[in-house]
Amino acid sequence: MTCELEPTSGTSRPTYKLYFEDEENRVRLYLGDCLSVMRSAPDECVDLIFADPPYFLSNDGITCYAGKMVSVNKGKWDRSNGFEQNFRFTAEWLAECQRILKPNGTIWVSGTQHVIHLVGVAMQQLGYRMLNDITWVKPAPPPNLSCRYFVHATETIIWAAKNRKSKHYFNYQLMKKLNGNKQMQSVWKIATPRKPEKRYGKHPTQKPEALLDRIILASSEPGDLVLDPFCGSDTTGVSAVRHGRKHVGIDMAKEWLEVARRRLRDELTNIKNSRPSRGDILSGSCCP
Ligand SMILES: C[S@@+](CC[C@H](N)C(=O)[O-])C[C@H]1O[C@@H](n2cnc3c(N)ncnc32)[C@H](O)[C@@H]1O
Image (cartoon, rainbow, N blue to C red; front, side):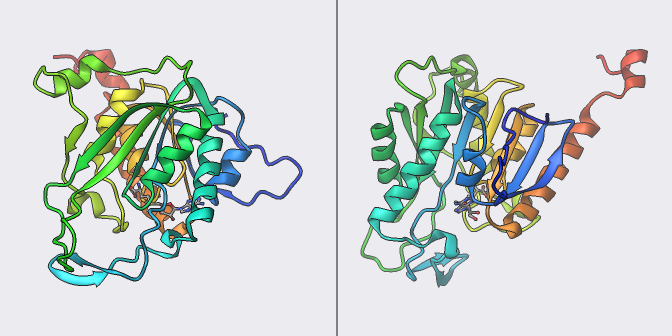
């Protein structure tokens, strides 16, 4: 078994397929609807979830990218289906995440104002325990072309535990150390991804690796299983393997899974090349 999140399709024909697997590092990417994949996974098998769901903001509006006026639309997957349906979808996938989280597991959900309040209400209805709401500040946001609003410069990331009984893991000491030996606050200033992170293709809502590095280091331990049900270009997977975690990523678009596969292979090659070889270990040349 590659990792604990091993969907079993039962008697019905599976509506998803395994797209990429690295058995040695216990990494898998599934192509399909995340609800179908999660529904066929056993209870309490995941340590950490990072979810970056559709924002429901692709409403034919405009925004600014690289100094040019462009459409705000991210793709069909990001269109709003109206409040009721958006809420039902949000509550459904959050319920599945809760079921497959281990008793002390936690979930992070990122979003803009278009979706994050739905997420917060659904989480409270489901009995998650809210731990923090992180404000991710983007240092160089695009200007607001309509001049009718403040510049949108932040996203919110909710961190929550499976339920009120959970004893969640938090690497407090490491976060303090990374913050110049001061307690880390819930406002994080992190730049959006630069060119090298997009060398295999540009996902319209790609998250920066530094953001996922912080999340994964803060709330999981080496060997833990990290799931991303809306993985896109799989920034979560790149960071998870970098820090020795197992990983399952799910996306319904082949286009993004191909970018994810190439990013993961690159990261896995880097890891392999930085491991001391058997000869080095035996000769002691890997030690200072
Ligand atoms: C906000 S993006 C995630 C971007 C990702 N965090 C990254 O760094 O590249 C959301 C992704 O969810 C996928 N998606 C939308 N609905 C889905 C569903 N029901 N099941 C699986 N994937 C879905 C979209 O194809 C899109 O790539």
